Length: 132
Length: 132
DNA sequence: CCTTGAGCTTCCAGTAACTGGAAGCATTAT
DNA sequence: ATAATGCTTCCAGTTACTGGAAGCTCAAGG
Image (cartoon, rainbow over all chains, first blue to last red; front, top):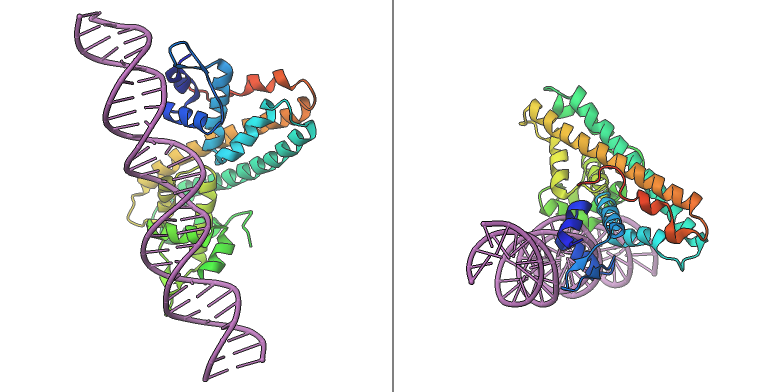
C-alpha cells in the first residue's frame, strides 16, 4: 500500500513516516514507480511508533522497543532485560497518569465553584514519586 | 529557594525551568540579587509540568492544564469542559500504556526463546484504538 | 580581606523530532 | 487531453529544549 494509506491506518502523517525512514526506524519496500510500498506488518510497526511516541517515549526508546521483537540476532536475556526496564517505566507512567487523572477529577467535582484560589488540589500537585 | 533547589525538587533541569519562564508558563519572584526565587507552590507547578510533559502532553496542553486551577477569571463551566476533555485523553493514554505493557510482558514470558521471527506479539501490535 | 569555586545571570548557538513548502514525476478522474 | 491528486526529494522553519560562553554573586578557607 502507498504511504497515504499507511498514514491513515497508522495515525502518523506521511511526513513523519518518511522522517522515521530517514533516521532508520523502518524502511519500506519500493514499488516499480519509486513509491514506498507498505505491508500490514509495516503498518503495525508505525502504529506502535505512533503510540509509544505519544506516550512520552523518545525516538531512541522507541527504537529499542521496536528492536525487542525485530532483531533476531539479539540474545534472549538482552530482550528480557530491556523489556523489564521498559515495563517498570510503563508502570511508573501509568501511576503518574492515574494520579493526574485523580487530580483533574477532583478538580471537576470539588473545585467546581468559587473556592478555587486556594483549591485543595494544589496541595496534591507534587503527588507520588516526587524526587527529593 | 534558588533555581538549583527548585530543580532538584521538581526534577526539571534549571535550563528547562528558565525556558518555561521565557515562554510564560510560570514566572518566579526575584530576590534582591537578581536570582529567581521559588516558593513551594512554584515547585508544585514545576513538578506538575515535569510529569505532564513526560506523559506526552504538549507544552500548550500543559499550559491549559495549569490554567485549570490557576486562572481565577475562568468560568467554572469552562474549567469543567477542558478538564473533562483532558480526562478522556488521560484515560486513552492509560489504556494504551496498559496494552503496551501487556505486549511487553507477553514478549518477556512467551517469546523468550527462538520462536521470535514470527512472534505472536506482532499480530497484537495494532491493538485497540486503531484509526481506520 | 582576598581568593577560589560553585551557583546564578543573560545571550547565542545547536539538537531532536518533526512540519511546511517548492519543484517535479506518476496515477486517476473527467 | 487535461486537471487534480498523490507521490518523490530537498530545504527551510518550528517546538522544546540543551550546551556553552561571559560575567556577576555568594559561602568557605587561608
